[in-house]
Image (cartoon, rainbow, N blue to C red):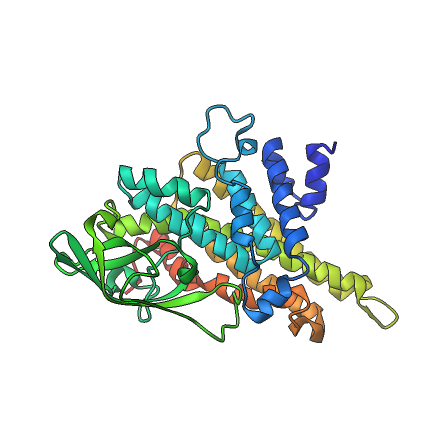
Length: 401
């Protein structure tokens, strides 16, 4: 049987700082199972799925079977811990992102934004009913906040309206960029209370009367993710289907901050995927009579990609340690998301350049990472919005508007 050190050397050869050694033996075993599942089930088809904008069949179900919220392996040697460790959560996102950015986005929407909308926003009864089903993948969810005219400014610009009518609510409006909405069993939809002008959140089902869902076409990134445009016309929701603890944008922001670290982790894993794809190519591609891995200019770019990755891993790991200690810092998470996604974009571009003309063909993995870098650079707070969060902390002055 392989030791933990041997498994880690095989699983994360790019981890030059040995950060993964902080994982427990049980966590390492789980992550090896996850990586094996991805490689064995989807490696041969992932580029075709990306090119054709289709989701690999069975991915959501297979991920659910791994039981990544409650698998006993994740609690071995951790005393009375009730939740998975922050370091494991980093490497969970990292491992899936290293394989594919679209798949980790689908995971993040479900187990991050969507799940946390119910966990943080639900009443005691709602949490007890929905959260276990979401964690086991018995139910699937997404996160319907963004609108056609409102992305970064949703804090003050929601146009979807909820009007109280007795013990019911009537929703009217539109949502855009909602990943996996048509596949979801329950959709947390954010809308402004017509009376109080404060945001609330409602549990909507795709099959409800008045719900129209169209899939956005012709994307250049995250092609596997079916992003949706949702139109809500007089959609009736019972008061008991309103998430009771979401009554201000502060409540919404709590969900967003809880998942921003996850995007920093995704960016880091995606950097590792870009490096892996590039390394594979340069060791096989020959020009001027030898493998291009033997040229100095190629090695310099590879070294820069590795350097970007090591820095991002270090920042992500420290963020995980902080959050393990209960330190959920807005500036720290914004810094990690801003810088890691920027470095991913830079690394993916270097990898794409190294692979030459072949690097724009979907059959080579680097093309996926290069295109998907544009999406991860933007979602969960654009580069500029995160910079303004950091700038406000530095200067004491808000420059958002």
